[in-house]
Length: 474
Image (cartoon, rainbow, N blue to C red; front, side):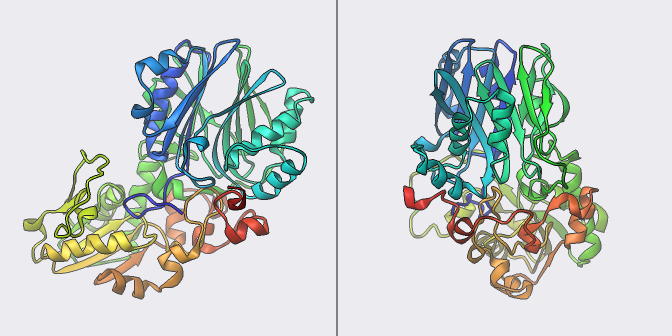
């Protein structure tokens, strides 16, 4: 189980593929840079130069992993790249992506975002048939299935491989001379296509990556679609699965995606602002000003302020220059982990009634510390509004909260959470209000983390234990 230092669930992963561009590796680098928020543990890029695959990957942020030299060592006009947070598989160099193998003198490479809920059963079946796994990731299963199906014609091999998978995934594959983009039939995770200025293509988890490289957004990879880029021509599509309702992950809109991206055909900034507007309608509070904990609650706070008429202030200031520190604070520097990034504006907060706007509460421990810092700064009343419903159920589809015991709303009532965090009041956005903010229908989304209604039931072993793919095989 892993979390970022704000106490929020970690993002899943980010994907970027470049097809038919002489600087494919460099464009993939910039695409990953735009997607850094989706994964900060490792980064990697694989390229194809027409005859040979090239790969560079390592633990760390995108600018730490790559340099001008390493990018020059990745020749070719096609590339797939990946940034990662671990949801299945531990955080280690062996689990960095893309994965690259050679089978019968053919290159196979994959970069994957999501979680396969039948991964343990598939892995055991493959091992019974002689497969030897090198990582603890469910992503490696895709390569083993492709190798098993390699005797088939390419389209049939892809269909046979991906229809065996169950769960949430968007994936990019690099197969000698081809880039293949795949999205599961529920469409849990985002994936979109853009056209590059030279006529080539980019495939990325979010539109912000297309924007950064000067591309033109074309469309999303449809749920249940396999898109094949080959021969320098327009991409072609396969639809191996029967058509079914989509189940977009609504947490992409709440928290994960960058606000300048369009996800599932919806602008993230506008949606988060509408969440705040609806919160102001549902939770009417008398206060002196509205404030976010930057940056997570910024956009809902704008909406809440504008809809309520209560002024927006920045009562916490974020230090944007905080890097990784290995120097431990002294005992006297209590709450260092909170204050190193956010510090209250004491003169603004003293004797004021404030409304904090947050995008989510998962464990509540970091929020509790931040509320205490506002109390210490002299705030008279502290109310909190949250731009999503209480998160009560684990996610099996690529978000890093697999256990109800780690979710404060699964253990406590709203009143108990407010008391634990020392709030004068706590209000969550209703589920209907959240869906209304998106402009789509409730049935378009996966809402399982809020209502417990899972679109796909994980296999029993996965359901009991497991976000480490097969912990027993480590």
